Length: 255
Image (cartoon, rainbow, N blue to C red; front, side, top):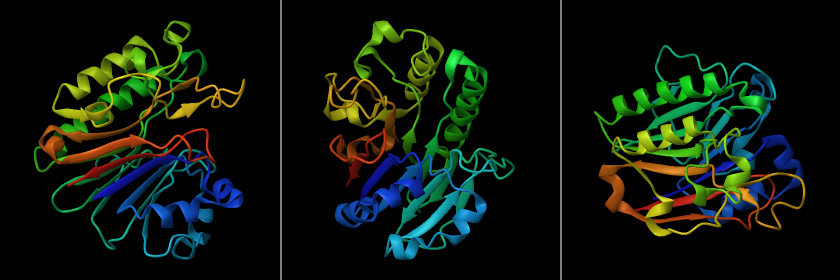
């Protein structure tokens, strides 16, 4: 099973640039998890995903605020049990979590909040993290999980090009990094680190100072799986040469 996750920073913009439909067709993944689709309910309703992505069914979670956040999960199966938010009661106003029940495991598409400039949203981010941790820990009591998405945190110093310059900044605060450590210690695996131990591998680059060409980036996009699935992970990699967004896609393959 092959899964791809990508913060596309606006679905309509990506479609206008061209290449997204071709990417999906070329990679032939079993599921695609897109974050930050920035679609309104109206735009979602008029988007012909079958024409854009033939062979795939769409599971949306666009939230309330138009043009902000939002998720799209493409998968070949139709009519799968789906949960938007982190419980049946969570209305997920910002469209940040979608869970599909694939039978043997749960597939979670997630877009974690950004702590924002001046750490204005850090309390909201940490509250979200805590709720997400509780949610995942409930799910794994039933079956394993595969989590793909933009977690908006560079976990360790090797996950960011300039750790000293960014200490305490959004996405690299001690609180966010400590939560990531704590979360993984509860029975989850950062799949990329099963295969790649060194630094210099990033998934997001600022859109200034030629950051991407100079590879001054952050690794903030992850595939995380339950410990029970660790031995089934065959490959996990970053696709830095795929353009179109300030993020690049990531991939995981399970036996």
